[in-house]
Length: 470
Image (cartoon, rainbow, N blue to C red; front, side, top):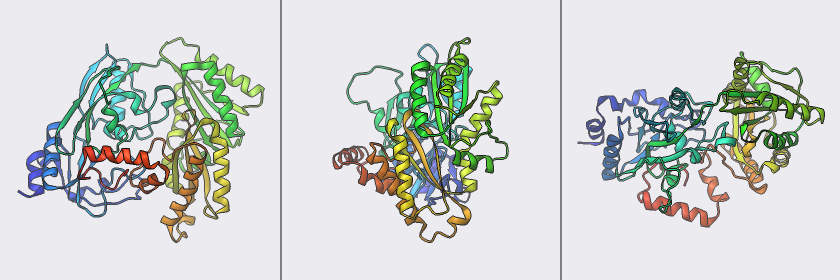
């Protein structure tokens, strides 16, 4: 049998996607990368994934694992060569086990993040990862990209939320590491090899996730500021006053909000002012009667009196709070409607955020690379992750001749500045295709050698997600 016949024999008619219908799986979410594939398969269980991987190992076929295909760096898109197959985990969406006494949830990789959140809520628990794409992104992809989101400040990213993994290795062997242990001091922590590996070491098929007490009290604030420095000061005060109740601390520039209000009809500014920066702060607690509203009012009131904050709005209902979160979560979609965004997912020491952003703008303007564009900022400032965006209106971008060179030149300035200020070129989006070539410039030779050694050990033929990360 040839490759297609063999795959059909393994996954059956429901598991083999007609390439005529596979176009959405061959293009990344932003539409920047388009590839081809020899086949697209959707295994129904881990055994089928193992058989597919063993077949590909025997035939020397490369494999591109794919979750919800919501990534922003082209990490799940095959190359234009068309010599890979896509292994989609979409059919593997079972909840395998809920253990409320151990506060763990064992799920298959194709479960959407929203499905996992709702399952946790059904047993009065919380799975805290929260992303704008949670209705369509899959937990296997979240794990493979070490996803962050809006609650990292309190709960950490995926590395902190995963207790155990099941993965299929490039040769088809299955590693069962589905252990719900919080302490296991028996050598290398192998699950960490796959978290953030972007599918380059194997296919994550299931995971044991940490659950937390459901949050019953919330308090939210929308705070106007005149500088990013003021945000850093207010963060320090919120941490000192609110402690572990501080769940989210999201910073947005006025330029970003203007794009949202222009492009998304059901959004409006909660404040009448035109402050250059806005913070969205959320406190949460498991207790029904936690005095969060009073706590937030106290810290913001003091900030207003001392001139650290300019104005503030505290929603009086869940619906009003949801409307604020809608503004925060819709920014990527608004930017796509407005034009072409050259987005950078940098991480910085929190104290260095204002200086780095200011210096980067100076360098980009001096280089003459951003004429007609807008500087936008949105990020999880509480953990140092800022999405630095240069947004070109469609009419301006249409006149740019060498677009790839422009993107590369902007990226180099932004990333150089981030590294100079002690930061990283990727906080949560990963490397994928978009930043692969940059990695060798910013990582040390020793660190790259260690990464390549791991890659060679698990994937000696380089068949797993080729052209990504390394």
